[in-house]
Length: 189
Image (cartoon, rainbow, N blue to C red; front, top):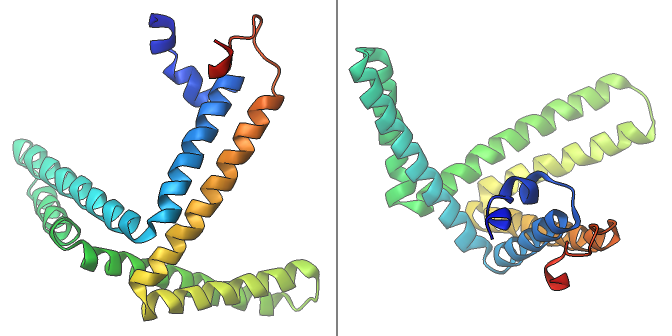
């Protein structure tokens, strides 16, 4: 019993049949939940992020007051204050997160288009770079135009990718050679 209880690092980081199987099953289950409820996932992650930010801000304030670092206390106070938005108004937090991601996508798309045009070659890689940067700009505009549905679409795609990765890991776990006595998968017990 104690061996299986304390084998969590092996299950999480190992490459045994059991570890790959359980990671795949966990990714598959999380992907199904995310794909079925992408809006709820966005709201939940926003609230979790807000609570983490709030606890971090409070910790910064308390530790900086103890060490008499008043600039850090001000920073911690601002961090805790900024955390109130996603904690108490998760809808506004989702919109703010969508706009931040939209800014990153727009900026990276514009920079990548500039790089593609500066290369002045017609290779397949340059064409792929150009097409992906156009999609990045379009996705950035989508997140500005419809932030909640844009985030739901992003989380839905993430759920589909997690399901595919989980199924791949489960199938791959069946191809890894078993342990010495075949007790490596849960159904082998």
